[in-house]
Length: 532
View 1 (cartoon, rainbow, N blue to C red):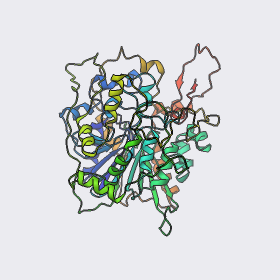
View 2: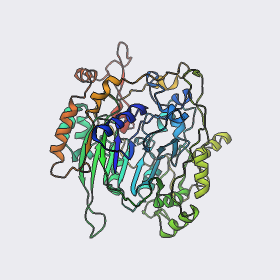
View 3: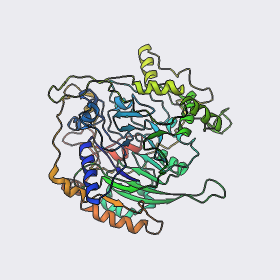
View 4: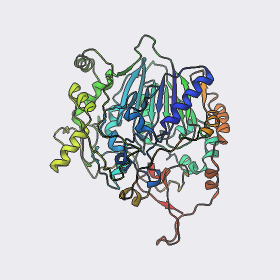
């Protein structure tokens, strides 16, 4: 089947669907599924906009609200993960995944589903070492700190995904797995994004947690976004099982949805024609969720996952045949995901904007139903319960086998001494005062799309008839061609920005200095710096 893969969405659903429909007519084909790799921005109203970690000028309604309200319906089944620019209060309603609108499915903090026999997994957010071992404790109204930490990857999600033993067809992450750039054409990548050079040379660009998952899951395809550049790689794995042939992963990162950018690609993926044409739960994943129920942490206290190191009674939470059977019985032998979307708050009305609307903290009935069915705990409801009671100690559900400590070092180094002072001029910058000051936030009506640029933009999308085939021999050469073609898609503004010399701040008072947040490095390190 044909799967359309999209990079950073940034709320541009209308443009994405229009682009796919154009491609279908142009190539005389039919796209069966759309995968979006984060920064989806499922903004329903003005209150949701206040929960996005972006400066005021980027807090725009865009077009998702039309699909939430029912004014429009997604023409293609759409599955997405969260990034670092999201309406976190809405996604927080669906920690285990669910429908954010009819025909648009969110995978949750981490999740695995199946469609036509194709197994699709993903993890939301980006990596930050200082939040990695904390629980999901954030809730609206967010502070300047929690509006960011809400989208940071947690070790519990990585731990759950590492319990998976069955093969994975497709996996999605917003930020790239660390080191993946060594398996593609680094020369062309750095030619286009020279400000990545020091981080690439020091091997600090990307998520170490995602890299860990890549080596464990070894999916056939791995799709990412976040760095706003198209990049392909081919990674040959070592076999995890003796006597089993080694697997390989075809990696593809895509740009953000803008004219003249490589934000969309159509990939051919083998599927099982006997499987139903609907979204299904993954049995192994559901069993893992139930097995890991005791590891729940909804506090900011750091929490180590169980390991086989002599300190824990239990460290294997993988799905057994018995646990799968129990889950299947609880589901009535039916793995189909119910189409049970329901709107939980009022939608944006362009004719009656509500400038002072506050952010909502709602318990979603989809999550309530899912948790009741499997005997799980609604993380969002637990956070709200603790908020109302004023109790943010570790919950009674936490297993004594897991070690809680504020002094233990993180699994990943937070040393930033070798990191570069690079700036990604494409990345949305975020200053502390901008996220804390919501008084002046105003509703911005959806702006009409630039249809004149659509035809030009579509020339940068491609259909790979050979399943995005990138062999170990031609990974370097094929990426050369793709990146050469997309080289021209750099906007004039971006090119001019890169040409300007960047210097470290020398005036501590900051007088007469324009400060720009160094976003790329800040994504992966514990300390943020500023450059002029």
